[in-house]
Amino acid sequence: MKIVPLALLLLLHPVVAGAQTLVPPEVVRSENVRIDGDMKIVTVGNSQRHYTLFCNVKTAGCITPERGKNYLLFDTSTRWKMPGATDFITLAFVQDWTVKYNEGENIGIVPEDAKGDLGMFLLDRTGGGYEQDTIFSDGPIIYGTGMSDADRQKAWQHFFLQMVEAVARQQGKDALGVMLAKRCLPDQDFCTTALDANLVGVGGIQEPRMVLVIVATDIHNSNKQLSRMVCTRPAKGKQVCRDWDTGKLVTDDSGQ
Image (tube, rainbow, N blue to C red; front, side, top):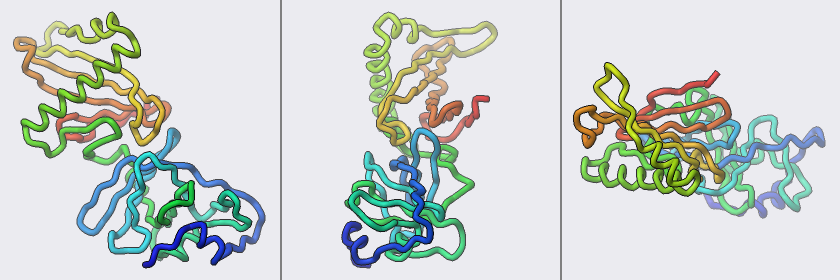
């Protein structure tokens, strides 16, 4: 398919809406993208909710959203006007210039700045982004998924130092010293250390978001790390924890 700028599409193909009522789209950003054969799985979201979308890489509209860029999410109820436009843009408009899936719930994504390609996907209601079993990264958090032992060790040192610097900057060196102290409870063969700090870019959101890192070490050998877990809060009242070494989901708590 030949790519035509969105601004020009609006002039070539005005949208006729039966009701002159604006139904605004959600503004989302890219969070994760992965390829599984011919299937592209894209997670987009904001501070309120997250969506897992998928498409066939050979199909028109199967785009890869740019990191850090705002997109407008269109479903069957969305009716919106882009800045300077006189006509509505709807899901049907996006489908006319990409593809329409006959089965499943179609979702269109449109660059908020009207610069870029139109996207058309199917909504995966069994996903939810953070409920994915395994991920490679989440903004500034790069998991050890699939890395060699040497590369995983380097990645961990980089991430842990990132957390240490964030704690010192946000809460002070005294607080950092307390957090780095090991906690060894009676009748347990391990000790834990926990750091929590705000990182920017988690979940694709360019605002500070709390990240908790918990490291368990052998009670007899503090250099032997038994587990490394990272917890994030993708939405209010929700906490998602993953094994840092594998990127695999450990818990997904509603926090209620």
